[in-house]
Image 1 (cartoon, rainbow, N blue to C red):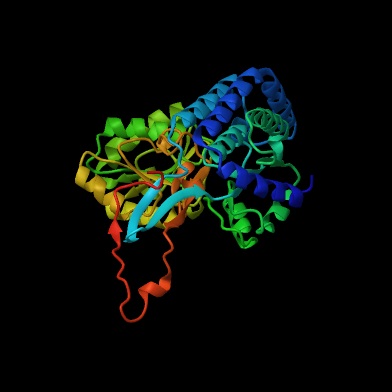
Image 2: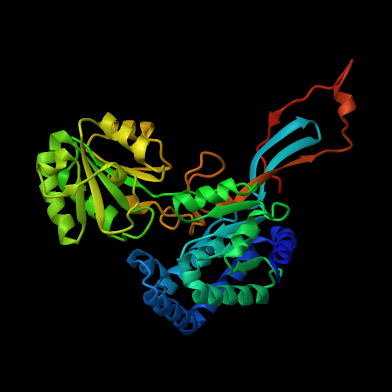
Length: 432
């Protein structure tokens, strides 16, 4: 099936999928989870093939780590699906109900977007998360994964498709694109695809945005910061920095830059540097940082780099305002952290940092759809419309206005003696 035929099939499937009730979608998700558990050996074998090829081709270490999809990763993916089953169905919720006049009632009701096109990096777990989220939110999905994970993605897509068809879902609701040309072709399918979510480099996301008329939701870089304030508990700050940088270094919510208030720099930097170096982290610092600890010089490029590796740039700042200014200039609007014992200063930081996720006294690694209780995430959005931050089901849902009347016509509300609208809020849902 070519790209246009796949997109047309997905569009037709989306119409059927939108009408499937919660029980049917949850049954399909449970069958997918069970099928993944029953296909562990098949999935791991495919992943081993991808890993072996990637090692021969000298794939960068951070990408190799993302590519690995072993038994523990399969368990995590299955747990994510079952957590999604437990969440309320986002479709059919009444957002507002208004009486326009007696017998004329207006409802704002959530509905699926339709067909979602997702271009994602070499993380097989992303395919599982994206597919499950689209299913629960009633959307069809067209997926294009990284070529490094071709074998793993193919097996996962087959397992998910087979289980979902057995559960009664419409054929074509999930399509896996595999060739490089498929990305370019996808961008021209505005008649069938309603939203594109790209996951990749800054340059890649900008390329997608510049070459399609389809709405694009996503983020480019993950240049995340931890700012250690003058009022910080320094032991806590060391732990937060370590987790933010080292817990899983090859992901977009790992910290890349550490900002430290000058008032605590002399005491804090030696302690955090010692802890980071024990983890193998290379430090790059500004001139003020290098007066206190041993670090390579940091230049302008370091403040703008998503390392995805055991490298951390460090800058000493004169004030919280200077930290905020640095973040707002160099950050990617993904996730930024303040460590401080002064809640008022923490809230001030939150109010002034231009970012999707802002945290007080906790690791940047919490910026994740599963950890937020969204079940999983289809991606991270730094957009300021529709959805922002980890995008779970709420980012795959739009709404529909439903007006229920009894022969009402607009002519009765115009001219002399026109009827008046009541515009009265109703305490009821569309299904009542």
